[in-house]
Image (cartoon, rainbow, N blue to C red; front, top):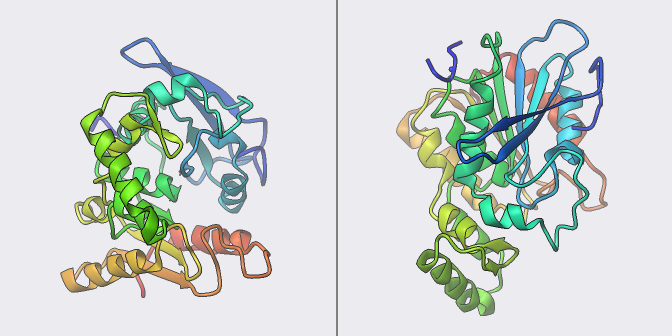
Length: 290
């Protein structure tokens, strides 16, 4: 394992409360992150990345479930720009600093900066990202040598802009197109559209996870719910088909027909704990299979 330069709430078997740290960006602003230590010498490092919104990753219940499944790993969560791990958030009214700073490109730079300061490289690095966080982790695989990457409910085969548009009824497409066009015309603006600043939209609209996944031999596990209305099933299948057509052998694709974006079934029962446990087992021996 190479270093970058050359490399959830307390659950499971963690031995102490998560360690809160910060790192200073070149502009003087702070990157906040937390590390949970495994009770025993760690198997490796699990890097976690939550989806859209400004709620702290350290308070994310889904990430907590994943952390429990990977209890033998130290785990790292890097908060988004303008967010601290203990911040109380109203997601309808995110902090001004979040709107003024946050983009997915900044998020990836922050993960890279934090990882480069953590000392000797861990024996294994596993990346796990859901929804927008899956895009971030797919891009991060091109900047470090990860042993495995797990991309969860993330519309990997289409652009972020097209993914968002696909979740809107046809009668709303003109409004979405106008908002995206305004963001492209004002890429440094903090003006809001659909809950995010123009700078966020201008940065993320054209990103496609698959473009980055194709640049690396990192073993990928792509997890998709058949009832997901946020990250279209067709986009996940397109990624699996593209890897097959390319003759690439580093993708494992799991499709759960009766589960949604968060691995809930139609009765509202969560299957995320069992899916996360299976993902943790896969990460120990990430042999591609479809």
